[in-house]
Structures are given as structure tokens and as C-alpha cells.
Image (tube, rainbow, N blue to C red; front, side, top):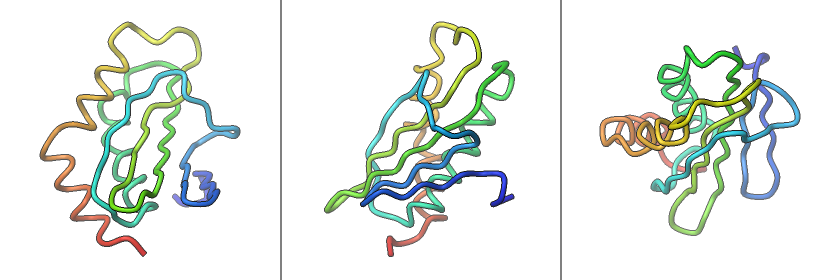
Length: 112
């Protein structure tokens, strides 16, 4: 699976995408406790994909920016054509779901 995803690292920012260059046609953002960025990005991508798998032409992108005491996660991606109204809100709902957030942080472990 790893060979199908592009992982770009620039300073304290990790970007996970299917296509290059990564593009955010739709997106939402959240803040999470510090964790392993790569694991966190994959977990967010999986849940976002489950929520948007019926969106034709959608290709997920997750960007994790490392801060001093938290991580900023930007999730969304590229959409071929027009994204339906409310797509950003659906991504935000995935990012803000307490069960998702707890599972992501637990799975991602501590930052290193």
C-alpha cells in the first residue's frame, strides 16, 4: 500500500496524497495532540475515504503540520469536477468526531 501513496516532508509538515502535486479542492482543518504524523495521516485518510467514497473523482490529501504542543491536520483533497455543497462540512464532521479523534491519537502513538 505504501507505494501507492506519495508522502512529502517539508520541515515540520507531512503531506500524504495519491496524486502529485497535492491539491485541496475541498478541505477542513482540526488540531490534535502531537503524534506520529505518518500514522496519523493514514488514519485520517482512511476515515475520510470511508465518508466520501461515493464522491466521484475524489482523491484524498492529508497534511499534518507539527506545532510545539499540537498538530494541525488539514484533510480533503482533489475532486474531478464540482464537489457537492456540504462536502467540506462532511470532512469537518469526520475530523471532529470524538471516537475518530481518540482512535487516531491512540493508533498514531507519540510523535518522534
